[in-house]
Image (cartoon, rainbow, N blue to C red):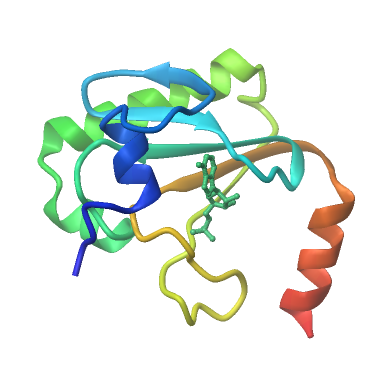
Length: 126
Ligand code: AMP
C-alpha cells in the first residue's frame, strides 16, 4: 500500500526541501542526501508509485514520457550522459540493495565511488 507521507512524496509536493536538478510537470531529480558516488542523484515521478513495476504498469503514458525526459535532461545537465549507471531497488527484502523509500526512484550515479559505497558493497556481497 502506497504511503502518501513518505519522504519522496513530501519532496514531490514541495513540503520538504531538496537539492533539485531538473523538474517538470511529471517528475523531478535531486541530489541523494547520502551519496555513494561522486555524482549520485535520484529521479522520481511526482505521482504515487511504489516501485518500477507499479510505475510502468500504472502511470499514464504522459507521466512516463515526462519521467524519462527528466532523466535524460538530468544526465545531460550533470554531463554524465556517456558514463553512468542506474539502479532501481524494489522491496525491503531485495537481495542486493534494499528499497528504503517506497516511492519509485532511480538512482543515477557516475564518477568515483566514495568510501561509503565500498562499505555498502561489501555488506551487500556477504
Ligand atoms: P533506496 O534504498 O533505493 O530506497 O534509496 C533511498 C535513497 O534515498 C537513499 O540513497 C537515501 O540516501 C536517499 N534519501 C533519503 N531521504 C532523502 C532526502 N530527504 N533527500 C535526498 N535523498 C534522500
